[in-house]
Amino acid sequence: MQEQDIIQLIRDDARMMVILRIVASLGLPDWCVCAGFVRSKVWDFLHGLTGTHLPDVDVVYLDPDCTDESIEKQYERSLRQLDSSVPWSVKNQARMHTINDHAPYTSTADGLANFPEVCTAIGVYMDSNGDLVLVAPYGVDDLVNLIVRPTPFFESGARRAIYEERVSKKKWETVWHRLHIVHS
Image 1 (cartoon, helix red, strand yellow):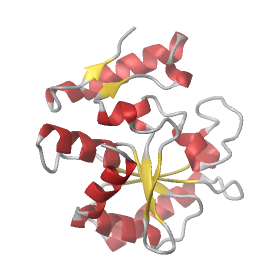
Image 2 (cartoon, rainbow, N blue to C red):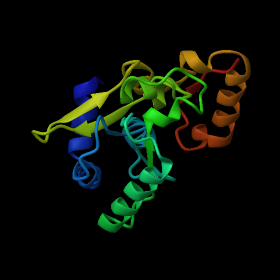
Image 3 (cartoon, one colour):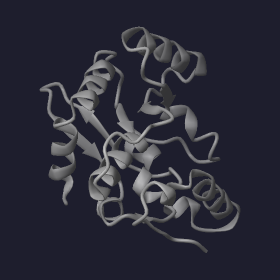
């Protein structure tokens, strides 16, 4: 399975396409819908499952000129007005570097690269032509090979403990039994 196969999986999913069109309608700068939105779709496909529940739909964007968290909440309200059935979560990656004690992120892809797991550091957006584009700073190999491993930022020290705790709490292997989770 390659990037184009993942794009086709998403394109063939009417609900995912509705979600992407709704987010695209906001006109956010450098945006994507990421993490479990893409990851769970691929894992479901590879396990012969359909429609695994998502606790939220993560929308990320980068706007360094407006880092007020209240703007993210306004976007969430707007999205809920467009589709209240979706558990929207919106985060400006221009603000998130402070949480990770990093230098400011230069793009949404840069923000994704600092997510806890490589397989979660993936997103998709709809360009102005309506084409789907994947954002995968580490590629798709871990995702399609069912490997869960920390991104470089979470490989050691206290951040490694955050990765281990997160993987333990998520219990992904109870839904997707073929996962290979990398532990310390």
